[in-house]
Image (tube, rainbow, N blue to C red):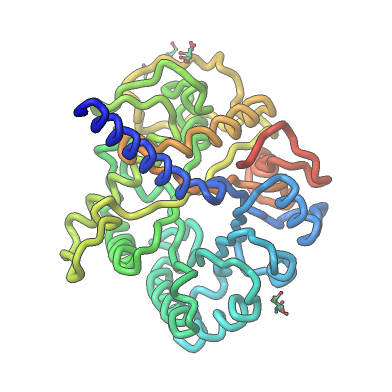
Amino acid sequence: MAATDNHFKLTMLLFGLLFVASLHLTVGQVGTFFGRLGTNLPGPAATVTLYQQNNIRRMRLFDPHAPTLRALSGTNIRLMMGVSHSDLRDLANCPQAATAWVRQNILRFPNVTFRYIIVGNEIDPNSELGPFVFPAMQNVYRAIRVAGQGGRVQVSTSIQISLLSRWSPPQLAAFKCSVNWFIRPILEFLRETRAPMHINIFPFYAYINDRRNINLSFALLQPNSGVVLGGVYYDNLFYVIHDAFIAAMTKILAAASPLSLQQTPEMQAGMEVKGTTGIPSGGENAAPPPEGSIPFERNTTALSDGPINTNNNARTYINNLMRVVRTGTPMRPGRPIETYIFSMFDENLRPGPDYERHFGIFLPNGQPKFPFRFR
Ligand SMILES: *[C@@H]1O[C@H](CO)[C@@H](O)[C@H](O)[C@H]1NC(C)=O
Ligand SMILES: *[C@@H]1O[C@H](CO)[C@@H](O)[C@H](O)[C@H]1NC(C)=O
Ligand SMILES: *[C@@H]1O[C@H](CO)[C@@H](O)[C@H](O)[C@H]1NC(C)=O
């Protein structure tokens, strides 16, 4: 009887786990960023068709773009949409500007599935725009609430790794002291509004900045022998960077004022994060490593690994990504990571080194550069 009983409990447990897993996976975890800095790109309607044909169910847009919003209307594609950086100052200074922005860019498109508004992408806190990010987030949040959209649209911002003073081992990651004034109110606000932080996770840049110390397989998320960092086993660089952000955010929130509200299970589990990632498939070989910190405790990678930005490596990275985001990281086991691939297309007007114009997973003519499968 006891054995049967246990068997029953085990079955129920497994059933419960499967149920939780299926809830997480009802909508594909991986979407793509539709950047439009190209002279030769398909139009919004053709692009939305490409999303549908390839089962890509999430889109990230850098800013509101009415033709794309019209093309998305009536589809089930979930949208993460940014705010033009030129609007940040007004949105921060003037609640009416936020009200108008929400009317113009959200309410006018009732059949678009807005999920997140990203107020500022990788804004340098100590730049001119830095001080506007948090007040703009607050005003946009309030305007969305007043418009009755608070239940379905969350407000966040997007940060990059340069805000961290160190990121390896992940447990020792922390925000730079010079950005604490910026990040702390934002994290407290996200916690209160139960919105996710958005982080940009680019093993590609970490690798080209420190080729001598990072194994190519590790950067491409290939099965490899891994590395122990701060006593924890990591087998890919995506997880390392993700967990570094988690650790840094957790430290800020632990030091922040305690919650007045009762802690929900989500809060105890820690703030959710969404990520954007990508890798170029070509362009000139990436820059040599600069002088400076060496995040890894070992030096196994020879320069003979060759350039990372090849078509074959991009194919490897993107296909491995589809797998690693489903399982969770050492700090967040079992929690899939909603991730946006940067970018949908190669964008020939994107500034910077040559490889910046090779981040697409599709050619401008709509052909995939290599095989992949969204699910
Ligand atoms: C939204 O969809 C509904 C139902 O299909 C339709 O009647 C309505 O005209 C659409 N609104 C807009 C603004 O596209
Ligand atoms: C990188 O890791 C792979 C897989 O563990 C291994 O086969 C390869 O030798 C490593 N490369 C270097 C240069 O250490
Ligand atoms: C790493 O290995 C390379 C190649 O063996 C060597 O030239 C270099 O000095 C090493 N770097 C460090 C920091 O030990």
